[in-house]
Length: 470
Image (cartoon, rainbow, N blue to C red):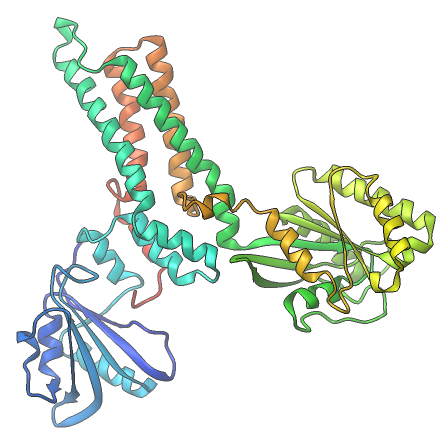
């Protein structure tokens, strides 16, 4: 699959900026760039050592296009493993296109999405999971997703998988060797040690698979649904959390008729807040559709905030009982979701009223309760801290491997299923040739993760999601 042609693309975002970086990679990268680069010191680019930067001008014949800095990286010590040139020019869209078009006329080809990283993989500069981590790193928008992507790009996940695969491969080789001596009825692979290895591999696979539950929500952002009756301050709470007027706020019940979503980072973790339509009986068709969507968003959410108006409830015992019933309904319908019961508008209550309300909420087992005033920002920081406590950040703190990629997750599930077959075969005393079939399948699925087993279609699907220039 490795193309010998030289590719070129803009490596920085398209548009006008202070500078732009144009990247070339391939056998002729330095020669093509050097033919149109005139160094201010008269240096010839092809003769310069690797990892050096040179000031000069890009020229098209006698015409000067721009004053630039040219960085030279010679194979194999470059990102792609090929000769690479990176040209830092001024960020004018016209200048960018003039330089790229010049190189296209002189023998370069436009790079496809992710082709620089694809070449890095094909040239052995990184394995497939590390290559995928490059895309995750580019798209990371909070501390946690950045930390996970960096850990994977440094090869933490790859090395863990590679070590398991190597140990299993050694045993597989011994079992395969036994097949050549079937008539002598000898065993080269110690079955007890092999069973211990299978148990260890199963444990690691389960741990990695379980980490996907945390990793996926960290990568996508933890969805938090804000629900409750109309006009209890859901939109005001969303605005207070985001510290901006994102949602329309009014005294008219039912103002929010559709869901409003926005994101923010709390303690390095991305949260996606969803302000939903108020839940109540209504004959308004549009509002009814909004309420239906509210329940859909609760289904999708990782955390549910049930908001109610503290001053109204504290003055009305019947209302207080109805709130408890509603909390019980949500708790019972979504038992696996963390439920946070929030009393809003406490600025209108006395200390005794707050205590009475707290006593009422304590009759419901399970949900966490919190008191705040969204209008004045009282209790907002405490609410953020509570939300953060719902997320298991232990693996992050200990820098453990966390899976965020659904392709890796699927391969790990298949590997675990096959390793269970191997264990079952060992316990049943199956012959080496039958064990070898299942072992090969485990090795295949582990190899899929790092790219030791791959095909053109898989690589096309992965790198098509990259940006051009990376």
